[in-house]
Amino acid sequence: MRRSSLWLILLVALLGVLILREPRLQQGDDFFLGWFMDYSKPIVRPAPVTLVEISRDDFMKGATKPGESQSKDNRPKGRGISPLEYALFLQSVLEFNPAVIAIEPVLQWWDRDKDQEQVFIDQAMRVPKLLVGVELGEAIDSEAPPEEVPTFWGAEGRRGALAEFSGIAHESDQDLHLISTPGFINAPGERTDRVRVPLLFLYRGEVVPSFALQAIMLWLGATPAEVKVELGKYIYLPNGWKIPIRRDGTVMVNPIAAKQVRRLAVTDILLAAQERDTGTKSSLDLDDLRNQIVLVRASDDPLQPPNIFATAIATIQNNTYIRRVSEVFDWMVIGVAIALSCFIWSMSRFDLLLGAIGFSAGYLMATLDALSRYYLWLPVFLPLALLFCLVIARFFGPSGAQKIPAAVSAQPAAP
Image (cartoon, rainbow, N blue to C red; front, side, top):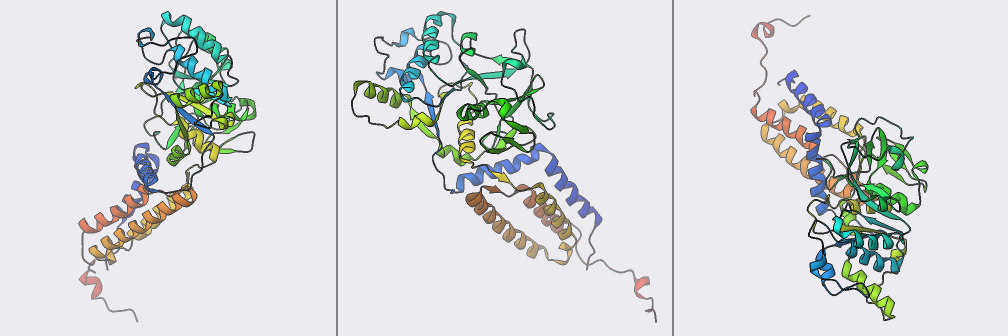
């Protein structure tokens, strides 16, 4: 029988460590997780968050502000919805007293819209808890110092892995800042799409909450001083909730949580508000908005970040995080693969291949079941990569039993 080779043991160990430490290789697990979530069928319940996507066409369907006319000609030709249209939306949704109104797009308009902008400000002043989008960037001349933004002064842990910014790239006018709370909407990094959503950033050396986390804090009535942050472990909210957080400030959200988010069209809210004003029977019950976060997005803005914040908010509200098994599991997988590399030479090539295929099918089914039942994620890329590395080594490595030299075999046995 062929003895285990040192080169294969070293290859398996180095490959395992490389997969664990290289972010680009870890994207393989993110791909598998997103693919598995499309086929898992967990039990979901509605989350107290409502997503409203606004487009310019919504305001061309006959819904107008009482006493005023809307025409396409008086709209600004720049990017985004006009201040008057946002004001009309706020006027309608405030009829149902939502707990928080979070406007994700950065509200910037042309100078010629100042009159309309004042109408919007008048409506925004009626919102008890208003969150507006702000985009972080590089430092410029006029920057908000850390004391003017929500900051976790007592955050514990190493901050080097957080996305770091030194200034404000895009923000709304100062008048809106005085009556609202900023929420940082910076788009996720290359590994943070459907699965990993940033909750923390580093602004001028201080840890600040992202748009999604700030929306939750406003909804709970929590201040930054009441929130405890341990980077790489948890964010502790004052109501007892714990948000599992990674070293880079991201959280693994549940893509299925997107189904927990209630979605309404602007026309639904405008119609419901008009029916309430006229005393007619409402075709849509929106009284439950009183306890919800209303998240507003511009549906036709290509420069807007991906639609991830509603999913993150729903994940936090319903505690449906994707929880990855401990890193101890990864090292156990590497240890098992190293042990297996010592015995593959005693197996035929095709027996090893069939065994690897059978194990992979069973492992994938177990992973899907754990994800559906317990929101528990077992890494897929690492064990499959190591297993089929061994299969390839067995197929293309030297074959046959290792022969014992004749001089050694001719020696008589010791008495």
